[in-house]
Image 1 (cartoon, rainbow, N blue to C red):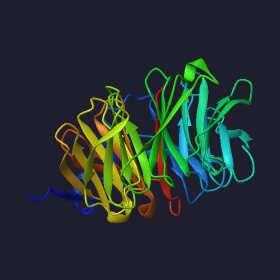
Image 2 (image 1 turned 180 degrees about the vertical axis):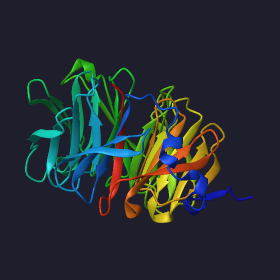
Image 3 (image 1 turned 30 degrees about the vertical axis):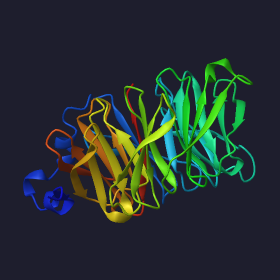
Image 4 (image 1 turned 180 degrees about the horizontal axis):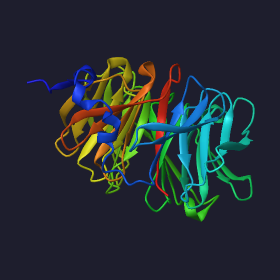
Length: 330
């Protein structure tokens, strides 16, 4: 039996859900903000997820791809392969400065941990770390793999995993805290084609990566550094993947296939599939909601993860093209 599919058209047809963004985020703490990249508008939207409204827009690097924020919620960092990394003051809603890694560096993913910004630079086949207090890149590490695109850090920030699209591999960088030259770097062939979306299970035991060119997922055992399972999910172009905080589920965005897929992480089986075309997916830290950026629909769909229903939409503006997101709690 195929998994059920849910259509956003069902939600839009219900008059009772007018103003549904309010319902979708009713349990969201008031101070929380949702940061949404507007790919087509080259801007960062600051969204109130309770009201379902855009509080402000900040111009960024052209065609921004990834976003993160400092732990205190004061700075956002927005990366674009064609424009560098924007450093944004969220209170003033303005770009403070722009970090230029170098011509052709193509910075892409950004993660903030321990007071530092970690980033990938696909063009240079490196990952790096930026200290915003000193406004200085304090190290770069060559990965030696093509298309170092996305990254994820362990909870203690001492291990980094990167998805390398061109080399069909995931790289593990260990002993990060020890600094150069004490790093240990291992490249793991994933068995699939074009790995991109990547996440580490909350217990730190597995890394899952979605492989775009074959519509599957490779599961890596962190201890053995080997692929232990391949899932053939018959997806069209899965590009983002995220665990729920309890580790029970995995959400995969398959925009080209007009699907948001929810998997049972332990059983490795599909639970349901939403009839959406998400460019990105983000799970709320308490696990109650997920947000799917609908670039073609200029809105963010809100998913209730308890009922597994589309609970509402947050409009981002005509021609905005929402993409990757970050949950900001201050």
